[in-house]
Amino acid sequence: MNPKIFRAYDIRGRYPEELNEKIVEEIALALIKLFAKKKIVLGRDVRLSSPKLYQTLVKRLSGKNNIEIIKGGIMTTPMLYFLTVFLKAGGGIMVTASHNPKNYNGLKIVGSVATPISGAEIFKLLK
Image (cartoon, rainbow, N blue to C red):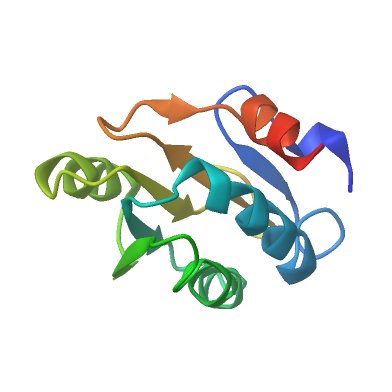
């Protein structure tokens, strides 16, 4: 796993070389600790790789450590932030690489009041 994909505000890399379903599975396993006993909102953008990465998150997080998943499907990042706060969720995960080229994808992870959780923090959970 390339540590350079863990950025200040997100996790982002070229799909599938740097970020793929296997890596998202490993990240999801680390997130189980972070989101234990919480409700989380999941969303994704319309990139071609996003449905696979989104489904990987759903599969890996469903039923683990009493995590309740709210599947938001296709949405914008601001919508994820709004839903996280409005639904009083413990956090949210958006599958997106934002403004990056189409061969990139990533994860934006937020806490209960839509505060960003850095890629560096997630990387520490992986160790």
